[in-house]
Amino acid sequence: MDLGQLDLIMLDILARREGKPLHKFLGASKDWAAAYKGGGSLLSGDEDLVSDMVRYVEEGYKTVKFKVGSNWGQDMERDARRMELVRKAVGPDIEIAVDANQVWETEDAVKFAHMIRPFNPAWYEEPVHSHDMNAIKDLKNRLPGMKIGYGESMRNAYAFETYAEKGVDHLMPLVGRMSRMSDLFKIRQLAKDKGLRFSSGGTVWLNAAFGALYDEDELLEIHEPMTDPIGDCLSIKPEEKGGRLWLPSIPGIPIRLNAELLEKKGTLESVKYFYTDTAKKQFAVRAAY
Image (cartoon, rainbow, N blue to C red):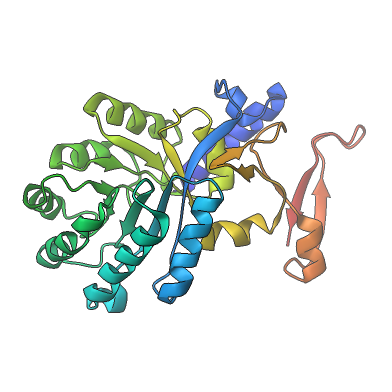
């Protein structure tokens, strides 16, 4: 993961030297990335969950996602009821995905899949352990037609080849956990070659730079409970509008940290500037402590 962050830093530096936004430096022909929106904490009540999912749809998202696995996977009835409530609230044309965060063993994962099948889940994310490849294959064999998604725990493209072999329908790398950014595009191409679905997650304000290179049906995940607090710390970020993220036209990565605000709030103790050229004072680098 640290190697991946270094890779991203180097891409940022190269794009800034060219005076281009990162997505343009990488060859994007558009300034937006398509997205879906997720949230729905297991700690949220049914009413709050439904309210959030409806709001996401009203914001322009055609695909929404929420968490399942209540009481460490012991309350499937609650999760199935919540799936039914969300389906009734958003209607038949909105995709609803559920994320189990690897909470079940195979038998329970199969049982829950049958409980939610009537509500047409778009995909069933990580129901069993992400490295238990034989369990994933068994799950796929026992759930014909049910789309299974995996990928956020893996660090490189090679693991996704195994996922594809085991029957995973939806490849879902997470940008902040990749060991190199080029693997995102290898995984994307693998999905195209195998006829699988592809999306990517992570800190979406950064991820949007890569998402601008994807097709409209290759979505970024906006996980609201994580995304909003990070967004509050930024002075510049992509604009969320109509189910898309619109990228700013600034050199390098599409975000700028609002260090002044964080310093004012006491999150930072102080801010120092370092310059590569003390005479011209160009290429300022700010270090926060």
